[in-house]
Length: 224
Image (cartoon, rainbow, N blue to C red; front, side, top):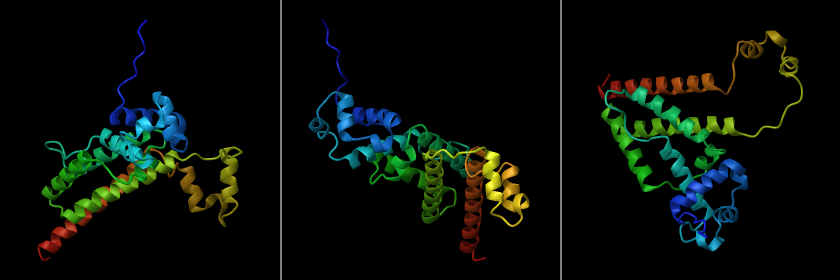
């Protein structure tokens, strides 16, 4: 009889298995002991490849970020098009895993490949007229926006009793103008803090604001 052979225990195997386990149990349920059980080994065997749970989470965060496809703009792609594409791909990568945004937001260290690709992105923005500071702040602001947006999307919310119309009526009762209040009009017109339209609005604001900042820096450097 042939024995069922488990895959070789490597750092890559640990991270891949941890990401699959994350989808099943969430970040709060992910433990080193549970991972060892999933792999069919004892806890000490894992410490040849990861020293702490934080190191495991850092590796998982690194894998999620790299899966989004880092790197400079494609040939003929404007920085605006690149930033929008990068943002959408990053959000999709976070959403691909349960609690993906929490994992990345709590990362302490990222891998060498990620850091090198990040530097290539900054260098490409500098080539588009950005200063190194503006390039770093642009990608940093975009990353923070997406992390925060997806954290809200992935948050486990308690179920609220009652029909949506009843909940809206309860909010309207708190406002002097009731259903005619601006907030209620926004709700009736389909406004939401989450969803594709809300995400794209925030992304457009970030890109437009960056374009204005870039123009302002150019004017200052020209002495205008």
